[in-house]
Length: 277
Image 1: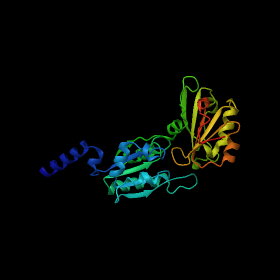
Image 2: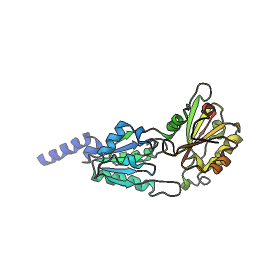
Image 3: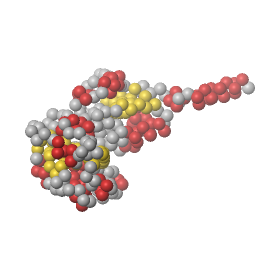
Image 4: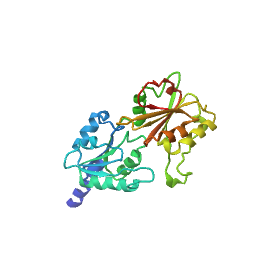
């Protein structure tokens, strides 16, 4: 009887503990935003966690200067993805995170920009929670705000852009959605007071622009394509909805590039040295 009561008390005590302690797993997985690329834009907390990490699973846009912050004995695992060149499917990355948490105390999932803005951080945190793994999110500067700072143009403005929309310019190929072209309410997006920022916008640049003009947005609406933002060789192509596709082809910009559309771009300083037109 005594042994049974002891076992019952142990089970009850485990149930009262946080999930990671109840299962005996004391690991923490940090979803860390590395920002747009410039190591000076990494947050102090992100830098500290990277320095302490036992293992880092990192994306393709993470620069060597950021990875060099890690300990010499830190295991570094590349899990980057590019359109059509995925090194690992998301399901396998999730499993790798879980396996890493089983072997290490401090696991870092290092992402460009911010983990929760088109970074699939939501999918990863759901998976980890379902397996009772302790998680923490460290935000990073996303590409939209980095590009805004580069251009010295606000993404919202009382006169020129009262609302801001962050959108995906490319959707999952496996969904069978016309070659990855995103489904958006183009009539709503054509509203004159919106500033639109498309991540991965270069893949369907022509179709995005024609969808907006077809829904009533002016062909002369300013457009900026920002490439290598905050990195050496950063460039901005400034054009409009009518000419954006042909101008991008002629400029041969390096990708990925961020697509910004809206009247706030009328505030761009035309003398900025990285501008192309």
